[in-house]
Image (cartoon, rainbow, N blue to C red):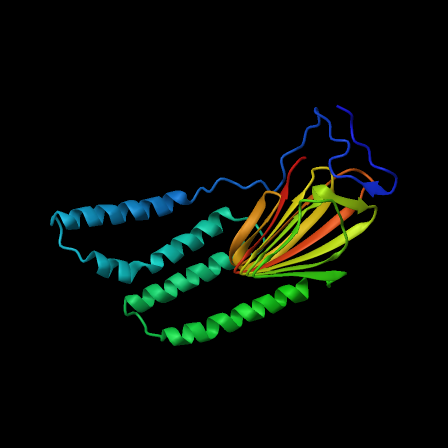
Length: 265
């Protein structure tokens, strides 16, 4: 099979990738979750309690137990994130889950009292503040903007020319396939925003890519490195062909997801 070659000043995704080319695993390969046994033990305990109660071997009000101790799930989730997550923002999400678990558990055990209305009055304004902080921390918008509102924006079927720009997925989806893009030499900046929607970007293994972003009540995954939760962030890079173009991707997800994945032709 004849090898593809890029014309001067142009970058063709996949050019120069031979059959014997080997790629190293990304630094952000998802680690195996070692905390699942906590959740398993909780589910087993609930099953045993239901079983004993159904056969009247013990007198227990299962629904009362669930109504009182459901915040334990938040505690376990927080400790699980704290133990296994090494991404930026992971510790903050873990702390929030643990504090919420202690707050609701203490209330259910009558250790103190607070109104749920106070919690919701605090929760959504804090979410908006965190969203604003993520915009202040991120790069400035460059180029044109494309919007997918309750619809989709696709750059995946036909050849297209890559340019710096912003992509918004609001209750919709954005799909960009950089393997089919004609990319001139230089640096490109893609700002991707997913609000109750999703952004999916596919990049070839021989393209230099810098990806980072934040998620609020959502998730981000960049070339195998992922993070999610109440407030989370992640970032990674891929070194491509020397002297080739460089693509900077910044993602923001609010009740949504931004994903950058590597895939050969």
